[in-house]
Amino acid sequence: MAYKRIEELQLSQYVEFLAPRHIDSHKNMFGHVLVIGGDYGFSGAVRMAAEAALRVGAGLVSVATRPEHALTLNSVRPEIMCHGIQSYKELKPLLEKSTVVVIGPGLGQSPWAKNIVKSVFKSDKPLVVDADALNILATHPEKYFQWILTPHPGEAARLLNMTSEKVQGNRLAAAKLLQKKWGGVVVLKGAGTLIMASDAIPAICTVGNPGMATAGMGDILSGVIAGLVAQHIPLVRAAKLGVLLHALAGDSAAAAGGERGMVATDLLPYLRFFVNS
Image (cartoon, rainbow, N blue to C red; front, side):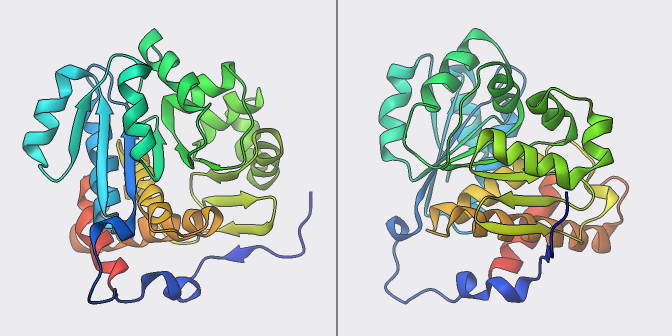
């Protein structure tokens, strides 16, 4: 599978989306991100995604999670509006208020998770689909053109019914197959993250570092991308800019303290720097 060219992501290509804000700006101008996930034992995932969305400039961020997690999440990051949900009935009003939805961080694959995923996939909101929402998608197929899928090679393999080794053997072909099968925009994560959409040339991110191979980095990325979509950036451009900002922040964190031992939340102050640079 050949392409005449592949776009190499450069921050200079996206400066129009990072311009200084007007003096009369208010929070409702910059969108409302809803992050759904955080099954038992995984509340940190939704917090990281939510905080990343705030750090790249989303006006409002809400989390829908297990009721047992809502109070704790709100205490550690009071800017995030946290809601405990047991069913779609409780989720529906939160969906209606949102601009974009992240579904998957820490979600798990329990009946609670599966019921929520199937309901959210029937909504008309732009979606960023990550983690266990991708694994649920693999067994409950849907095709949608207003979503960004963010699989790592293992998740991509499940979505394509092949091995991760085959995915890694031809990442460009795998990204193309994912986009054709599932629609929308595909972000195939890994060294040289690829972004694929039907109406744009493939793009590759050539920055980032091995220190980013650690838990929570994908949650941060999903929040970054959703935070950009909330600010009315088109999906494919939000995916490209989000991947690039995430990688640049990772490189800055590594330069400050080294690759080994870096954790996902180390990226947060650098994300804020790059969206204001």
